[in-house]
Image (tube, rainbow, N blue to C red; front, side, top):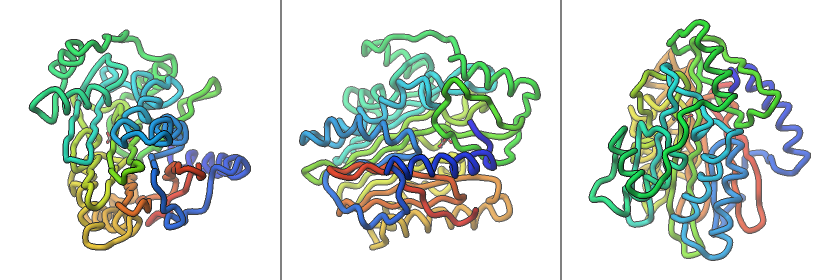
Length: 341
Ligand code: ASP
C-alpha cells in the first residue's frame, strides 16, 4: 500500500515499464469499441481480465466472466483484495462484494469474514435466496451452508506487517486516501503514514458476445477501518450498477462519498441521457468534489463505465487511477483522466 505521493512517483516508474511491455496506453477510451469486452479497476485488473477472458473469449456469459475475473484477484495473496488484504482496526479482515447481471438480478455480501471468494457467495445470494444482501455472521453461515470452506483467521504476512506498522499510532483520521498498487511482493514495505486511509478493491464490468452486460465488485474495504464499517463496494447502485439497455459502472475509492451520490447508478443514468462513459464518470466525480468542497483534495474516488456499444471510459478525482481493458486483440492498462493532480 502506498501513500499518494509515493503512489504517484511509483506509478510514473511503473508506467514506463508497462509502456515498454505495451500494456499501458494514453487514455483514448473511444478507440475500444468492442464485443466481447471486459474492463476492471487498477493494475490487478490486467490479470483479472485474463480470468474473465477465458469465459468471454469462448462465447461465455458476461456474468460468469465477471465472477471468474475478480476471483483471480480475491485469490491473490499478492494483492489487496480478499483474505490477504489489510484488516480492520481490530485486526480482522472483513470482505464486501456484489455481482449484477443483465436482468437486474443482483446479490451482495458485506462484513464477511474467513471466506475466500465473497463474490461467489454474492452470486449464490442472488441465485439461491429471495434476498439481495446478506451481512456478517449471517452471510458467513449462508456461505458455509453452500459449501464454502471457512478459512484460517490468520493475517497474511504482508497484512500483519502493515497492521503492526499502523498499530504504532492506531490513529483513525482520514488524511489522504491511498491507492493500492496491487503488488505487495517480497520487497513490499508499508509506507503509509499513520492516520491515512487506504482502499483496496477490484470492480469489473463486461459485455459478452451476445451484447449482454454484467458487473462485479469485491474488496476488503479501507484498511484499519472501524469494525463493522461497510463501504460502497457491496451496495448495488453505489459500487456497482448494470442496466443492460444502457451500460454498467463500478466505483473505487472512498466508499462513503460514492454512497452519498449513489455513484454507479448515477453514472449509468447519465449514460442513458446520452453522455459517453468518460463524460458520465467525470460528471459523477465533479458532483462529489462539489459536495466535499475543500475536503475533495484529500480523497480519491474513481468511476469506470462501459456502455452498450462497448465503449469504456473512466474518470477520477485525483491522478493515479488506471483501469485495465481486454478485448479480442487489446490488452492495456489505461491511466484515467482526473480533475486534480
Ligand atoms: N470503495 C472501497 C471502500 O470504500 C475501497 C476501494 O475502492 O479501494 O470500501
